[in-house]
Image 1 (cartoon, rainbow, N blue to C red):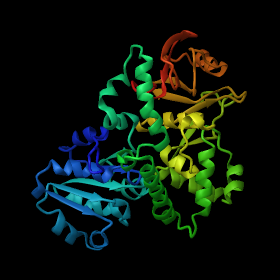
Image 2: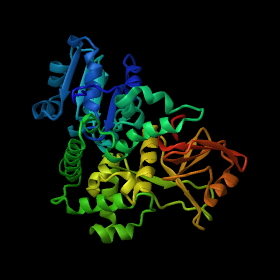
Image 3: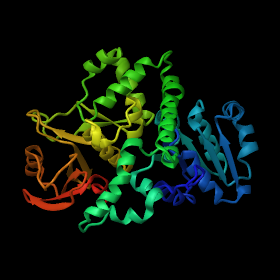
Image 4: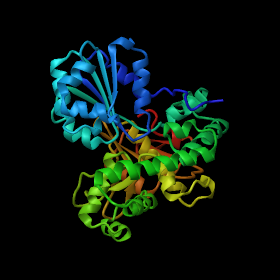
Length: 412
């Protein structure tokens, strides 16, 4: 039986460990409860304890000492240490300038975490240019999720030869759970659906009450909840700001601010148009996807099985968007003014690789819009994602790979 104390290896851990001997500050940003503290504690556990100072800025006394008497803070926590870990760094006012003082005056390797990219980017990095590496830790990718659930199946995710229906069916069983409940570590470690839903409800409320409302200084959750629910219902749709304003009660400028904060706090991610011709292709209007499907389904209070839902296509599309984010791809879609559209465009090494998402696909076939993109941009490869189909086909001189959703972007 798996317990909630079990550590699940994160892909980012390898990247951070490779920087241990480098002088730069390591900043780990990411959503609340996505595992930042657990990850750093795992790294700390492998270091000599006498060389480590670990501070949490949710401890108000330590935070005030840092803010009001940086020399005393350094004397108590930094002097004679090799490693300094500061959790919840976003609470520090003028944190970047103060951290620069420590960096410039003490030979200590510094690690910080923060749950909002706003504070770390605006307040800190302006003082730490050339002194900091910033990493983003997201909820579990499907690869990390499957590594915990059934590691023997991992090798099939990137297999280049055909997969049997039996293997696809077996991995899909895990995919359907992941698509409903997402990848927050505490959710993945839960043993029942009821427990998963309770944990997600707590995460959802924590975001609204502790993170977003605090940043926006709102007296009520009502508008924010309406906005999150509206976005959850509009996945894959081009954002209509006037419609969102009418639905939520936000004025236009306040709506833009709220959307920015939801992005900075890793609730949603914008997907912007890819274009090369301003006259024929959309250039402004974004779509919005959720960083985690479990959070999205919590907003809708809907954990019904995918087979019974009329929004299964949106869930599949959000899955691909979130997986692209975790691979550090900017989200892009393509749409012409004549309404030809491709769900995602992966920009990689000067190439534009289209990805189309379908719920079910019985045979390898593409839409007129997808064929139009292939003819116009001549990409080196293209992908069509669906629940079960695994096939290859050359269309318009482009190799098109039809893959199960969870196998679509593994090699990218």
